[in-house]
Length: 207
Image (cartoon, rainbow, N blue to C red; front, side, top):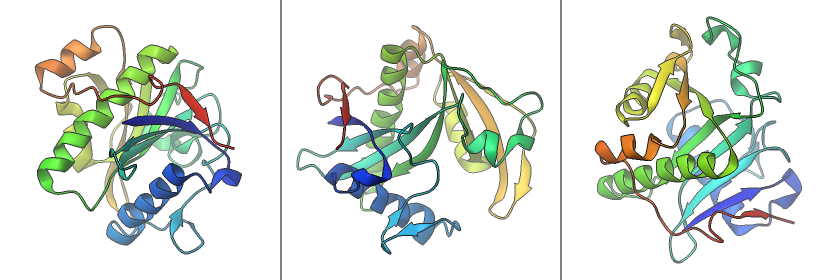
């Protein structure tokens, strides 16, 4: 199942959101050692987790977190514009039809084959959401290892500038174009993997 949620920091009692924030801490803080703020000692939540953020959360039938991603509108402050504008050779993309993919998170409890499966499902959900909501492009900041994966998925993708070194290694910014043929491109590489959505990806605003 895929849930599309929007929230503010006041909605932390939602089970899917709490599981996602806990999984983000496990991956980005405990495993990758990123220096990020932690809430209540167990949730990774930063300044971009506000009422404008959207979350795609892939859940098991039992409601457990499998994978998730945060989508940020680029016509508001977001990671690329606020923290890494130097990754763009030109202007940072910023318009109502562009969103930034952040915190792409696969649950650490999954085995390799499960991880591959839910990665495909999450990428598919990201594309399905774009097509249903008028999003024409995504941007992202990523390290070089994951950048190679993203480029291999089959969608239209281009770097926004040259990679630069930071504390975690080389990072770069990219832009992903989304249109009606994107599912076909992903299917050719074996990435396209739709899953049932809660309310056909209707937006649940947690309260």
